[in-house]
Image 1 (spheres, rainbow, N blue to C red):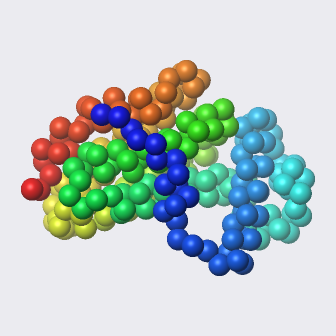
Image 2 (image 1 turned 45 degrees about the horizontal axis):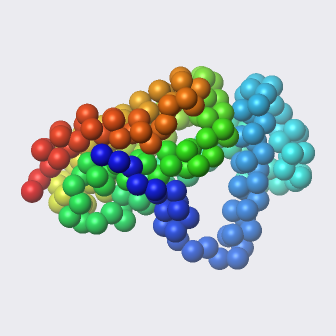
Length: 214
């Protein structure tokens, strides 16, 4: 099972923004990029907000207009990953096998990691190796599971409150995603995340598809 090139889906699947919203997004993205680079380079505890705003070329006031803390910068990065997964799953063809739809969905952020592997690896390792950030990452994954459960319920016609399949399938897909990130991070980027995801879904696809309603 091969992961297709889904990097461009991140751009094309998002709703169109107004000019004001686009400007806010640009500033937020610049702050996020500057913060993540510094945090990955120097370590979470060593970086100050003054260093982040200096690197981004904005004021402290501007920073706090978008984020309450440097931790929130990483949380926003994780929120964007979850949005990309949910949007991709919602856009998959209705008759597609669950394993294929979920592979495409969780493959979106991993394709982005492959496209900018050095930067992405630093950020992933920062998150996984910093207890405060790892805790927030796990919180976000719980939210993603809820979103994917709801979407799988819609796709299958199963009530997530009454049926086990939607939540179990969402959990399996996110476990595969987390396992790939851990393996990729542990190899210091030596392994290909797309290939790892293919292998992970080769393991879980039979369960996802056999148990799915027909």
